[in-house]
Length: 131
Image (cartoon, rainbow, N blue to C red; front, side):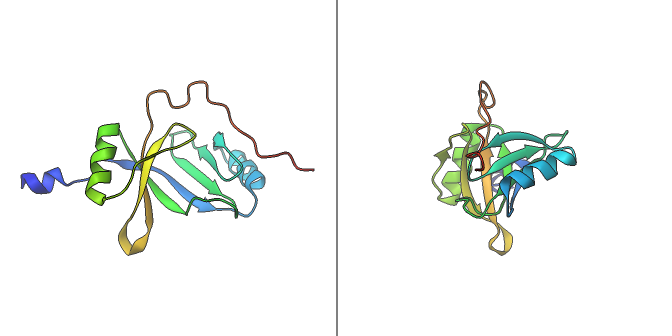
């Protein structure tokens, strides 16, 4: 029984990442229905609702796959799950740390950790202005 308990995942659903045709338009539409912009780059944007649930928007040029994001509470927990999955951990430009794996039916799953300094003095990086 302790082996089964040891292998359980301790994360919670943090976000879903979905494709969008136009990043700017997608951000405006989700702001209109109550999401706020948390992070924006040329190749993705993270929106959050009032309860903290995230929606990552992925335009056609995004290097990120559509996925389900599961949040863990510590770097140690993230690294332990990554070791069990045989996946490398990567630090990202927005200061998050994660790895990707596969869920049921081949669905892409990102296991992510937000360090204590996440969001501190972080600026939203807008895509290149339209001409």
